[in-house]
Amino acid sequence: MNILIFGPNGSGKGTQGTLVQKEYNVVHVESGVIFRENIKKGTEIGKKAKEYIDRGELVPDGITIPMIVSRLQEPDCKNGWLLDGFPRSIEQAKALDEAVEKAGMKLGCVIEIVLPREIAKNRIMGRRLCANDNNHPNNIFIDAIKPTQKGDDFVCRVCGGALSARSDDQDEVAIGKRHDIYYDTKTGTMAAVNYFKDVAAKKGIKIIELDGKPGVKEVTEELMKKLK
Image 1 (cartoon, rainbow, N blue to C red):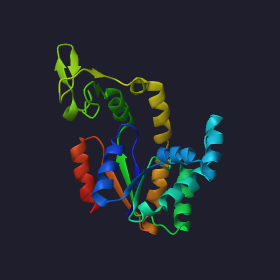
Image 2: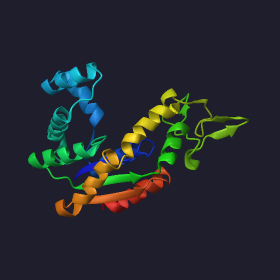
Image 3: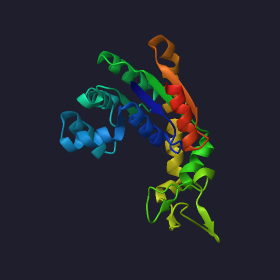
């Protein structure tokens, strides 16, 4: 099965994507990793991408799309792939759709985690890192993983360790810019989601919408039920 997964920063998209990858034995492909690998290996596409990145410019879709499609055609993707972090605009959605078909692949499913913008922002800003283990989940805005209150402070809900917040998680301007792109229904990522919804019936693409407000476990249960 070939899958696209969408969700704003703070929706738990990465977590759900990893679970789908394990359940269906597909490759979890992240667009950012593809860029880094091509640049590191010094591929021709990677060299071209690096020229734009070094100038502080966006890499054109004419370079990005072939790079992604090439990755999706590698041997480890023969049983299926889950593409995460791309497309981010309606133009990229159209170009990717066309390129995937031209390469003889079929997109089988689009997963969208729906989450109101304010909740998504709060979840990002509520994330806390445990000094003992960064994998201990703590978020002051999610009841299921809310840290333990100790006096006026919070400590890790798992081990009682000290907690801290990442500086970028507290940057409302940066979060706002990322969400501006995602929630843009005219040209941004939401427009890309709507594009696939519009062509789904014609192309035989399964659309799965998930309410991202419940906890990770509840969202996972709904996702697995709808994927079957």
